[in-house]
Image 1 (cartoon, rainbow over the protein chains, first blue to last red):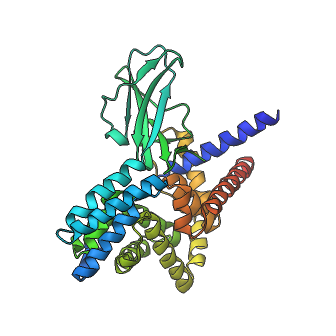
Image 2 (image 1 turned 135 degrees about the vertical axis):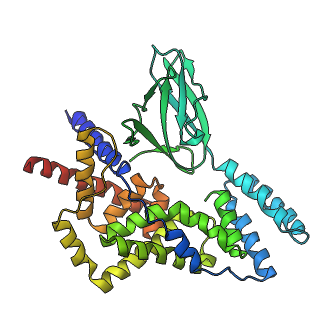
Image 3 (image 1 turned 90 degrees about the vertical axis):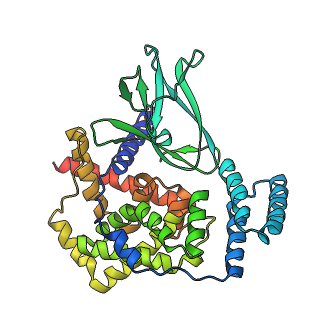
Length: 198
Length: 182
């Protein structure tokens, strides 16, 4: 009985969270961008200030999660320091690329649809283009796909047999897509244990 | 923060003012909607949206690119909106607007029951204390992590989590009592 109450509570909270996720926004007026851009002047910065800024961006962008990683980063930055004196543009890309790779999280999507002949995963992470086929996992009795996703908010759904769009029944949040379909909402955090709802 | 966004801010700080238009385009919608919730006025919301982006541009040197840009921008917007409310006594204006049962924008499509509940949730959100309302909007509508919600509201991640949970519980209570009233 206590568990039933708890389940009811969770379901209510998820429903409300889903309603908040799906609240319609108003579009901003068309001239906001022009009005802002008309009021700003280009920043002025010395070459020394520019170089220092780039060093700070590179250092901050790399999460120091382990001593070995830190050692590698120090080497990257030291190497970059030498490069910077020749061409500051060469410094930033490797450090930022590394940070991006480290902050991705593996997300496993599953759909229990034993009668389907094929299921595709579509969402904001692949621009809603069909083609990411899910595999049938006989031990789970479910269609499965895994993706590495950066931290952020994504919407997705399953395309069953190339025709039917189905939201994830296990998703914590679903929202209306404005065309009568439900999309599932996924929030990927920075660390493993990525998927969270409430 | 994504590497692309950090690079963009770097370019802006290096003198490429035009690159700032990318950030304005990306975030004008949530900031404008924040201002609508704060002012209940299209005109004031538009002015405050512009002011938020101008202020953020002026302070961009202080922004830490190890963090996400949007929560930082949101903090600036919230501060400006609070100043506006203090100066214009907008809280009274807000109450008047609420008493007129201001219609939120309608969702397109969807089932009627869902649209009805969304409308109720929107109206009840407006009755929540500001900090709870914005914590819920940032978490579920904008999809921020608890850390980012905390950054935007100037509280810890655990404080943000507590606010989100309490906000949801309050909304649930209010929805329950509203249902009973009907």
